[in-house]
Image (cartoon, rainbow, N blue to C red):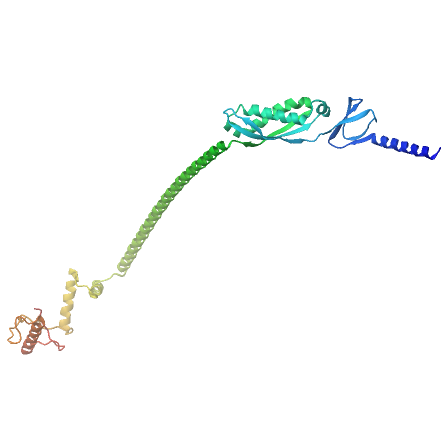
Length: 358
């Protein structure tokens, strides 16, 4: 065999080896491949190693079994009360049957997008504007039911549908903003009124409790004062009774009682009082003591001056007239009294003059 034959034989062997190696295919995890034999569906390969017949068998579709997210463009919808808005939705789907997904419909993603748009328009068209804004869960549930039932023949499972955004018209947004502001102001006014009412009630309860406590404290104080006063009176009476009992026990005679009476009289007379009340039973004691003093020659007794008080003398003085001051007349009167005492020898024993009241 010449050199050219050897080269061609080597090239042919290399091609055979490459083709044989390419007949072995590995399907990744969470994927499946749909194959055809001479243009007809033959098998669905799951993950793992597979052998493909060269020239006769062909892989027509590689399908991912993972869950997918389909984010479509916002759809213009009209509510039951003729409010036009844009709704943005998200659809989550998963391929369960690769054969149906391949042969069930052409371009299944485009089909799901249009089906979601029409279903959303039908559901929102039966609702009012306010109901649409507050019923997202209901819209999601209805869309899941309709889409899942419609995509079963395509080997697709709709796992979830979410309304991502609802965009009302500008004028509706302004009205909603005003309504929201009014509602918040209303709630604020209600909260302030409730807070004021609660504060007034709390303050009244506090005043009431303070007055009750003050009344109880005053009552307890009065009771304590009354009890203390009663106890003090009781102790005084008990002391007096004990003293009387001791006096009765020692058999005090009349002389001791007279001495005690004199001590009491001395205590009464000692002071700046202008009036002294002497009991009638002490007059006899005082008279007896006076007689005893005169008999023993003790005491400082003076003779009674029964001479009538001198009258205001008539002063013959050219310097004094009726217009003279009272001080001058008083001095003249005092001089006349001293002269009268000198003439009658009515001096006091201590060397002082005695004057009678005018």
